[in-house]
Length: 342
Image (cartoon, rainbow, N blue to C red):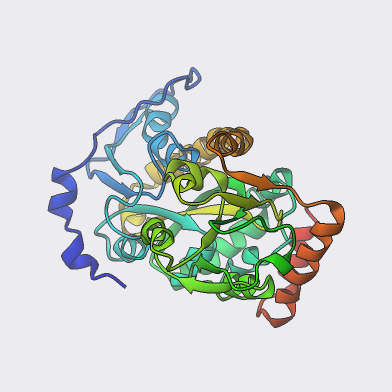
């Protein structure tokens, strides 16, 4: 993992902040409360989405909501799209306090803990509606408490991260797992994700996301398994020409705050901050849901061929994918409780 102390300093963060206020157009009118409160310490957020992305808005909206709904004044300095370093260095930075907030996918939380790793199992979350029920459930909060007991973070409300992942590659159309054999796919450190790529016939290769574009250009990897928004926003359509909508993994964005930063807030501001984070998530999720289909169309407009498997083809993807379940270590009661939300 990158040495965050040398890569990121609090002084540099303050000097290079993109701004002390975030304005998001179209935000609904909010009734003000009576008593204003102020947090003097600036909050630094290093995210993995670009400005305007729903996963960016789910954090960037918090100061505006706090100000207009809860009369709490905070300064938040937002750094988009890994401008503070790799996901690994940002994950380390939020633990040490060099940054205050970061976000990443459920599979990337394996940097720290396997608590949410069962979400990486294919064919567990079957729809947006199911995911939203989970995000607002006692089950999610119970798991968040487990993470907080192991890692020096406070879990913020989760959001979707672009809907379902699509299996992208530069070589050929993939109608079934039989077509995958021999292709190399970028994966995270998640053992489940790597096993899934193997089950479909591919070769998993763990490299940072910000190295994937060059890796595809140079033939180090042939593709990756991500949502349409990440393909489009980072211009992977320039090097990837095929995608298959395998409908296996719905992406969840986990958002965390340094525990010491949160604990240093007065109790009244803590409560308002968490309420504002929930409000922001409830704005970002519908945005994200609408954008999933739009970015799919945008990629097709850029010449990327996206195959939707027939029922018979999809059964092959599902049969191969669910073989991962037998070799994965996870609490089966969690999956049963989750599937009860379908």
